[in-house]
Each structure stands twice: as C-alpha cells, then as structure tokens.
Length: 265
Image 1 (tube, rainbow, N blue to C red):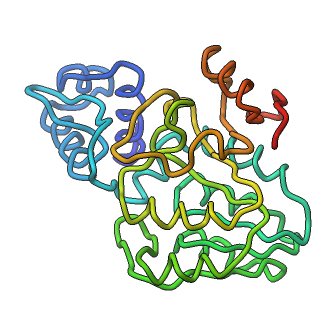
Image 2: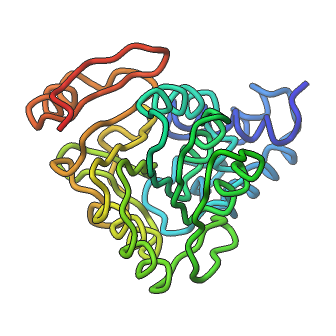
Image 3: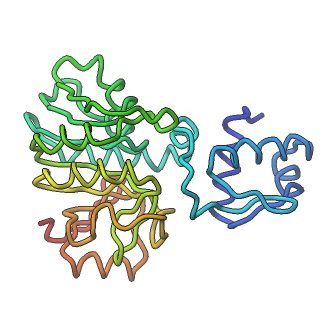
C-alpha cells in the first residue's frame, strides 16, 4: 500500500513517462477512488508540478510557480541520489565549493564525506541544514530574502555576498537543460543568485537527471553550455546531446560509477 506522499511521487513519475494521465488512469493504476485521485492531482497542481486538464493532468513544463521543496525532493529521489554520489567523487579534501538551493544539491550535501575539510557556500537552507553535524565542513550561508517554498535565500544581498567570495567548484541543479540553451530555471531571483555563484567559480558542474534533457524552462540560461566544465547525470543523454556536449568539451559523468570523458575544461 502506497503512502499518500509515495503515491503522489509515483503519479509524477508516470506523468513524466506518459505526458498526461486521466483520473480514471490513476484510480485504476493505484487502486484508489476517483475522489482520491482528484485530490492527489489538486495537491500536485497547487504545488506547481503539474497542470490540471479536463478529467486529468499533464506535465507542467512551463510554469513559473516554484513547487514546494519537500515535493521536489521526493520527486526522482533515486536519480538525484545517483547523481549526488557520482558528483561527490569529483571532490577532494580542502576545497571551497558552492551548492545551490536545488534538491539535487541537497542530496549532494548528504553525500559529502564527514571528514572532508571542505568550505561550502550555499543559498539553500536545507543544504546548510544537512551539513550542521559535519564538524570538518565549514558552511557560509548567504544573507538575503527567504523564499519559503524553495527553502532558499535570494536577493541583492545574497548576490553581493557571493560575488565577494571565490569557489573552486560550483554545483547547480536545473529545471531544464539543452546544449543550445544550457542550464535553465523558472525563478528570476534564484537564477540571479546562481549566475553570481557561477561568476566566481573556477569550475562549474551541472547536475541533471534524464527528465531534463532537451527541455525548455522559462528563463534564459543560468549557465550557458559553453561555460560548463561537466554535467553529472543518472543515465546517458541522447546521442545528439552527447555529441554536442563532447564537441563543446563538456565532461559527461554518469551515475553508478560510469563516465564518458570529455576534456573537462
């Protein structure tokens, strides 16, 4: 028997696969009533993750609404965990790194070695919280304005504070990615903080699960593809995307320990 949270996560998975679902589909597939199915869709739609349609729902690929952090954290959690494990292997000790407020970077924070002497710059409240009990990891949480649903800090104060720092590797999640447009987001304030972080990083790494390939988000690139050093993903991208990334010299690291090496500028 699915819990409500698990069932809603599974509904999101099916929508990613099929593009749309009817209330009848959900009721049949999960053995629940139509009333419960409609309630699940209402919760997901109110969180900005899906778009309600007559009698069902479809994938929401162009909403400016920011889904609740906890719902996003549960969505594709296994893929994000695989990406985080692979990304953590790019790090050594005694490095200065940046993690954005994405749920994938939250999973990366959980994967950091407790004994690694790292300095972490982040605008993510949950990311900082994940590192509270790591005595060897120092954390700089930016100042600024709180975005409650996203559990992030944004605004001019955050951007100015970030620009005074320097980091060796910056890690970014994304709401969409394509070789043509790079890493994209939906929220303008979040995007500005990410651009500020990218501007002071020696190396920039995108964390992208396979559902983000070749999608388009609302905003211009947070980080252009030519400014990326590496992409870490849970499975190999389509051949056309892989070829484009290789041509641009972007290293592609695939979860579960498999890697396809570009020149990794």
